[in-house]
Length: 400
Image 1 (cartoon, rainbow, N blue to C red):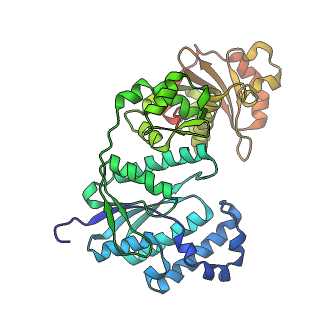
Image 2 (image 1 turned 120 degrees about the vertical axis):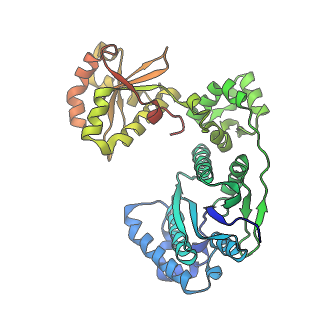
């Protein structure tokens, strides 16, 4: 391998091979594990910690290849071929489930100890193979995060190995690697032979996204639409561009790769809703409730999505002023009933249809205070006399 660059950066996807390959020992040590679901909850933290320690000790006690899957075998194969840097930086993507976390934490422990590596973990959230829209959105976010990690390195010294986890993660991962001109490394479990799959050049027509961003935005907000509800032009667009769209069971959506492309920096502004907030309210949150700022942004984004998607269906939370019997006081603005447990979020909002912009005039984190103040804020709302500050970047993205 003389003349070939060492891999300093490695991006992996991890499955649960370490659990499956040690299942008999796990069932003997943790008999309750077999009937434990995959949801992450506080009461499972002790079980998770104990299993990670047990599996780490179990694997390190014997030959590495015997108890492990392709994730660590890839490291061994790179080491054998003299392609591994002495202190590689490794990013491992894994599903945010009980088993996904146990496996990834164990893999991290073993790789750090055995290969003197710096390892960081990245969670892939909401991977539900039984919920197609949620899965598509989750995979679109996954591809964007893979892209971000790859671009921290460069093709000749970065090993991209989407090996573990769901097969769709491997297939879609290859597309992102190819888009950035990175080869993909693959290793069959039980084998020590690495396969380097060269990138196929992927060209995207930027004009297509620019010209059709309103329709694409609609798909991003609604996530999935009935195919028969589309116009003839929209149907023709979908049929013409299978790289972006998927049609299945009478429905259509923007597929994960299409979502990834639309997340690219040069296209992001086409998919961001203008949002402004009363500057004094933003400063109040930053001063008194700084830890709640990201929560507030998330709830505002939820408001936008609910209003954009189906305001009639979601009228109970979008127009909460009806419960106060305020008459005409809510004519120009409305009350949003956001999350109630474990945190409370309520907001005064207005939508300017001509501008396509949302205005957030007040936020409450306390339900009792909201009950006392809501009516007066509805009555006093004045868009002209308020000093507004733009928070579109933090709240307006349809990708949140």
